[in-house]
Image 1 (spheres, helix red, strand yellow):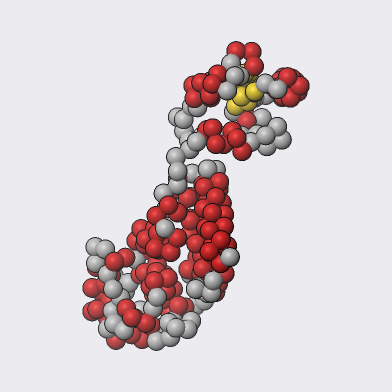
Image 2: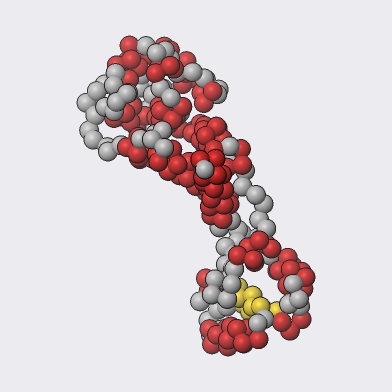
Length: 244
């Protein structure tokens, strides 16, 4: 029974990932991967909700009176965030350790691949992968994305960081008369030929596939075409909806 439940959870998690990623731009997919991963791990009590919120927000910004020990390379926002992080358990003492071991932390900061470089001892053994990611975000935020990819891959598997290519047939099968397909296109993208070929392959060629560019004054015409498509079971390509 436990094995069956695990298979069901894994299937539903991945189906949710695939279905949501279908409607996201590429740059947003890793964000969703992280959110999904975090919710799963929070439910398993593997990470704390408070720590994940801190990772997303950097904590509540308050006036920081602790002197920055290395303003020449450690920015004010980074130091302020590290000080706020130090107030959380098990990060107590982090800001003092940075102050007292500034050379070691500078070496970590200067690393070409800080996401794979161990934190200065003893933090390299005291913190798990997610908490290490929290520290990295404070010091080298430019390396957070590849670190998040590695983290999600480690926790959920490679398939959760490599969304499948867009499948028009699968999207069509998941649509219906009250849940149409909506394409939000990148500049220069034009799916017209792919839609025409797909419509022909599905038996909606010729008069059974209508297309209209929406705009000022086109609303009534589009409404009639929609009603006609509903009555006849044909397909309608209504584009440029932002012009309405």
